[in-house]
Image (cartoon, rainbow, N blue to C red; front, side, top):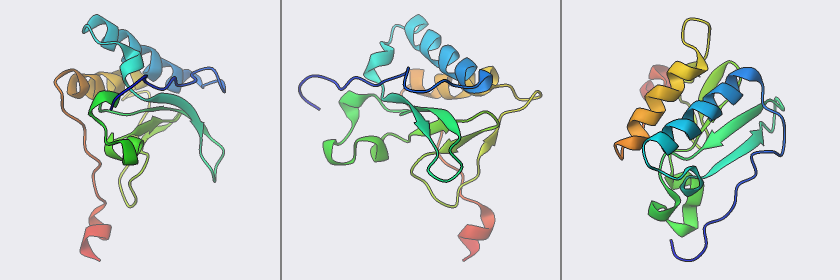
Length: 131
């Protein structure tokens, strides 16, 4: 992608404590790994149906995305208070955020993939594969 990278608004809505912890861990980890968080698409979004607010991040840097399909080619995920969902994927499993698996632990999983140039792919639900 050429030209100036778009700015993403991380102050549009207030995140809940789990989504904020996920966001904070991702941004701090990217910086600690020598990456600029602004190189990744990030935003605070609201689910169209449930109106839940979450933190969206693309697992692929903006510089490696196809211009026509920006976020669709980024393996974008959204961390809500109780789960992480793959934003553009249908019929996929969500990753639970809970006391046993806190947002910080989930952030480490995604951060590890991002820092090594990989992504955590969506998992298709078994019943959807059988159809």
